[in-house]
Amino acid sequence: MRALFSLIFGILMLLLAAGIAVMGGKMFDVSRNFEVNAVIFQPADLSRDRIEKPIALDTLSEETVRERLIKKFVHEYFYIMPDADDIKRRRRSDSVLARMSDPASGVFKEWNEKVAPDLEKMAGMQVLRRVVVREVTTPPGEYIKVVYDLHTWDMANDITRPPQVSKDKVMFIRLDFEKGLRQHQTNGAKFNIRRYLENGGDPATIFRFKVLEVVAK
Image (cartoon, rainbow, N blue to C red):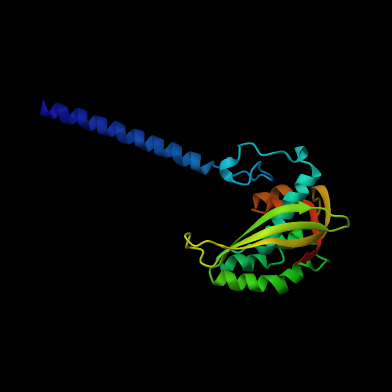
């Protein structure tokens, strides 16, 4: 009887092991076929508020697209991560801020010379800064007015400390914008948007959006 019980128990263990092996193989196959699809716009800023299907570009107004791109530009202009490598990447000529700036305007050059050094210094001191754009308006004239707040944490790893908040800061931006996607790169070569996004390019830089001038107060 004991021998029979041992035999049955051994068969059950063998079947269980085989089942685990099959399930593990299926999970491995799923992981190999996993994809992350890039989207241009989501209906909400916070991931928990997003629905699965992104909003199509054609359904958004020109004003909405422009405002979201302006918010992205201001974010890139001022945010700080407690990571020296992050600001080094942002100072390169192929960075998001550089691509969103007109190459002949000197906007990126001015940022690199006058703003980036302070950001880099603070990043090295483990400072964290969040940019909150509160208002984008178009007063009479060719400049767009952007009102924003800066929330700065001197110690990024201490969530109990309240941030230093600089409120009601103002930036005026002059743009060259047209709703639609860029067809050519800065050097005149045809712009392969699909390949650019698949290689990890930032979706904000595929639009016909260039900042010509920045006046920050």
